[in-house]
Length: 129
Length: 213
Image (cartoon, rainbow over all chains, first blue to last red; front, side):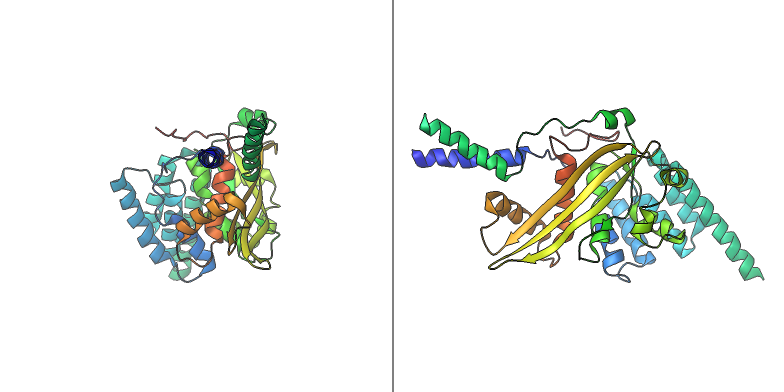
């Protein structure tokens, strides 16, 4: 009897612990985005732009089939990777998608698209000379 | 009578162990008045001895903030952007005036992070891995402090010194981390998720927050 009571108290302790934090299922489909952010710094070279583009696009497809939205920042990150590759159209498409989904990103995304455009123009001028 | 007392004592001890003692209510007035929709996370300042702690932390902060309903700017793109603009280190990035950040990023709020402790510590018969960081959210227009907290998590191994809470957290983290040797990124995720969702002093839900069904 006494033993049972102690068990009950232990259970209360565990419940109290879980009660400190409210958890919920993820509302976004995260895929490999976080791991990719880590690899970029911890293992440079393990995540070059073409690999990142491949993985991010796969994750976006997975998100669509899972029914959960793509998290903030993923399309912007993809747009940036396309810009590094020199794929201006794909970069603009991804950047625009981030802005449509999250209008809060507009100032930063517009600036990014503008800088990509200017960099490409400069590159064209240099290669024409 | 004695039995009742000892019961409460035990409950009290448990509450203390899990760090969930009743606190004075957190003052959310500045956060509610500002009601930010978007958060710019700057690469953390690192006071720990682990050189990669800053970017390990950075990889695990977007998710808990976004899941709390905020737009989080792409941390790595922001980092690259700042580096390309003459700010090669987190220390320099953290000293950029708010009006400049607002002009180029257009965020509503900026999260400043200082890592105080990171990694494995060896004791006589065991080791413990810890992650500890201080988080401060500032209004980008006024510089006013909107919210602050300390994110902390630890993973003990080899003994029962961590108490019940330590054992449970350790079991949970080990389960999540699987065979990955470096457990600190997942510990950082745990620390951030707990701090952001803490029922007494966590961050209030943002505009994209979807309440659990």
